[in-house]
Length: 136
Image 1 (cartoon, helix red, strand yellow):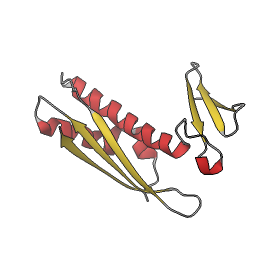
Image 2 (cartoon, one colour; image 1 turned 30 degrees about the vertical axis):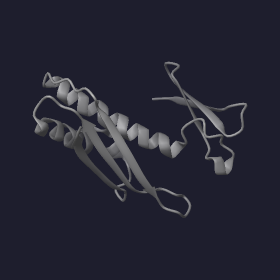
Image 3 (cartoon, helix red, strand yellow; image 1 turned 180 degrees about the vertical axis):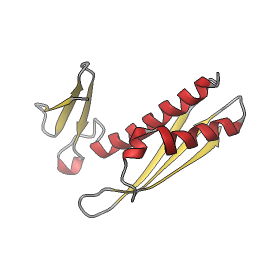
Image 4 (spheres, one colour; image 1 turned 90 degrees about the vertical axis):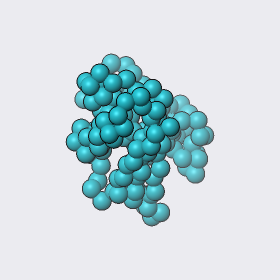
């Protein structure tokens, strides 16, 4: 896996491009000069965690011939106040309106977070990563 990060002509804005040409833009917090138009790196990490887990959840359910509609993940995180400001705690709430057995959705989430999501498994073990499932 190779990525290329380039500073934009706009101060504190960075564009990262992967090998296929897909791009994501990230910026510094407003405290350092960011304009609040793009995700900051720590927000992007949370989005990556939720996306990775969601892909795994949906793949697990798809293998069971289950389609999920009205799906989303709420993400909350707490950071240490001192530098480097790493995450202390992350909570994910997986929400869906399943027309199938709730236990299947709960099990898919559990497997995603504890066994399959490479982002979750790459996080520091000192982060209090919790998750729950709610039904709409």
